[in-house]
Amino acid sequence: MPDTELALIQRAQQGDQEAFAVLVGEHQRYVYNLALRVVKDEEEALDLAQETFVRAWTALPNFRGQSQFRTWLYRIVTNLCYNRLPNLRRSLNDLGDDTIAEISETNNSFDNPAHGLESRELRSYLHKAIDGLDENYRLLISLRYQNELSYEEIASTLNLPLGTVKTGLFRAKEKLRLALETYQESSWTTA
Amino acid sequence: MDNRLTPEARNTAIEEALKTYPLAAMPRDITTSVMGRIQTAPAPRPFRVTWSDFGIAFVLSLCIGVIWFSVQNFPPLLLAQIRMYRILFYQDLIVNARWLIPAVFFGLAAFLSALTIPYLRRNLQAK
Image (cartoon, rainbow over all chains, first blue to last red; front, side):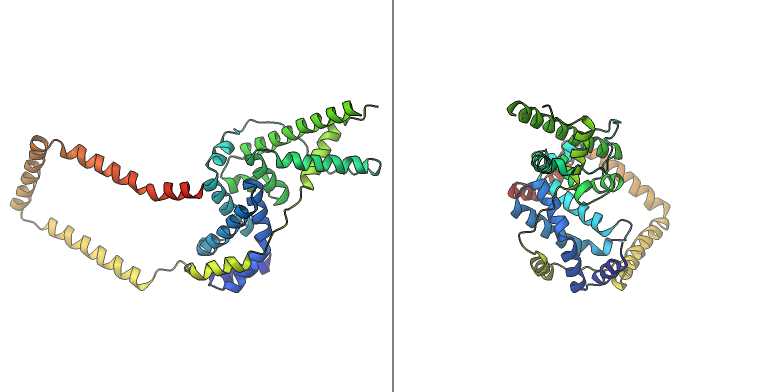
């Protein structure tokens, strides 16, 4: 946790609202984004983000700094999402924790200049496919790739076993792979 | 020409898409509305034991101590009488008011169930 953020948290814990406003400004986009990926409704996501910060303010004295402030906020917003979508919790638990080999997270860029347009199209198609995934997968993907949490942090945020988090992300990628195959089949047959 | 991606290229494309999945832009800044709501919310109170906590704890422990010492110093005859009346009362309950014990249990269960009503109503209203 950066020193300045720690100082802001300590000031907010003493009741300094200006310090808390700075924290809201810094984290609101990530909190809103996480809520939006789950509930898929702008107004509801804004409402959830506001509620998250109001709850964070009242619970701030209990924040002891064992976890990062942002992961603490994500825990609050996911709990609020559980309240809004009662099936979300169940669908995450139902993922199980089979030991599955992970798809390696490569750093190779797909942006080959020769395939520029094609890769842009493909990426846009995959982004739509991500939007079309079930809410539990969208939540996991958002925490992993947009909020950049480690598997352990996701497991702790969602209060799930580590294996379940890995299984969920693996299955989400499997679904994207299937979507990609379908896309390629259709574009190949029309070509 | 079949220019479909190899499995490795597919995985790379998926990883790339996941890493570039954009953060949604916020329709509006929520700082002002959050701060507005915070004005009405109770200010966070750091966890501290206050003098009133000490006072309440002292009075409670004093009461418990007084009761305990009183019971210890009751004359044995009085203690025996209390025990006897307790047994008689229990026997009387079992014989003449058999319905009372299940009624108390059902009442308690109904009361505990009723405590969940506000939560369930809030959930229903949220939907």
